[in-house]
Amino acid sequence: MSQSKREQVVSHLRYLRQELREMHQGVLEDGLLPEPGEIRGVMAQMEALLELLEGKTKNKAKTEAN
Image (cartoon, rainbow, N blue to C red; front, side, top):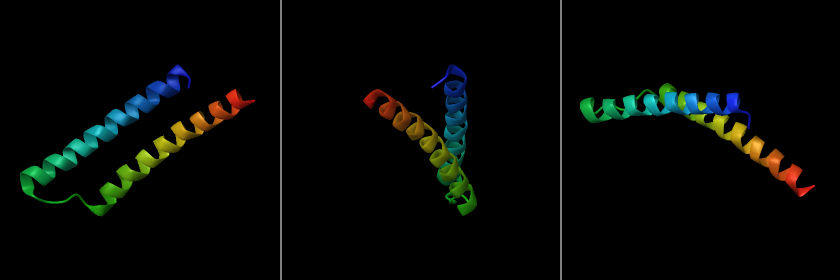
């Protein structure tokens, strides 16, 4: 993975971690669950990152196998 892609992934993971912290704080302080749309949005972003990373891993594994 190129350095710029790696930096993008790290930045995005930091953003997601912050979003999850804010959701957690809301649950602890107010006892309220986040909106379903918020949760779906974070899950979709995490899924996209996972696909990006798995795609790179799969491509690398195929290249090394040949």
